[in-house]
Image (cartoon, rainbow, N blue to C red; front, side, top):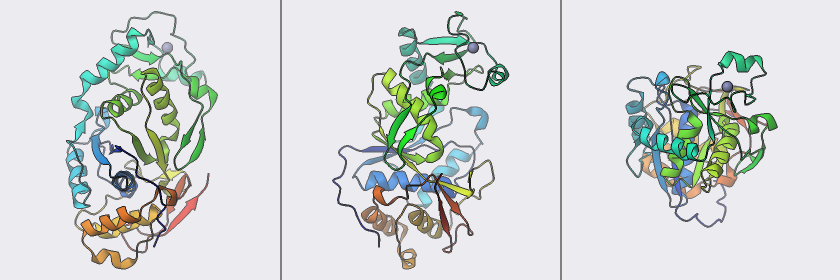
Length: 314
Ligand SMILES: [Zn+2]
């Protein structure tokens, strides 16, 4: 059994799981779902689900519904209506207006190829060129560069100076709102206090923190879970065809997710109902017990009770 740290619950905790519907849930995304759920519920908090479908070029038809059905099969019920980014364009346009009124936005006509040729980090080429914003990519003048922050699991996180100071995109040249913008607008709108997600988002978090500052909002607390990898540096993802987790037999993968998150379930736990498995996990979960590593390698067959984990420190 894991040791339960004696910490007082956070008041008015609001957390979220925010998958992009580019395919079915795999073990890596299950870990993020279960981790954010347990962290919220062990703080008597509210747990929300947001479908991050803003990048319509990556959306797979039917995936959002499949993700929600899978969460239900795993007993992970959300507390408020599911939010879809594609239904929130007004919120994002409003956020861009807010930044525009502060004269912090400019249009950029540079191609990805041009930026790559200059070293990959955007150097502010168009900042004073006064291009028309019509049909243009938009960048935010970086006034609140964050080079360092404290993560609840990973500890001090350091970001390269160049990356931290880059005027990053908030609207793409194809007209789509950029991820950094929408995720912060959503987290503010949904009053999110805690973000528990995979460590692949450690770097973008610095930009999101700077945007919270720019928009005059207190940022949530961040806890980045170790990333589930097939081998060092290669995360399990929809892109490398990680297998979808089973909807008809959720208990083994749920048990593996508990172990991944630093819980010590006995194998007999699978004899309980899903609901009772989750309530055991809520009672025994502690953020302090989540391995403080960047990656965990999954070295045995997934969806089996023989799943083996190897912690990788970067
Ligand atoms: Zn430019």
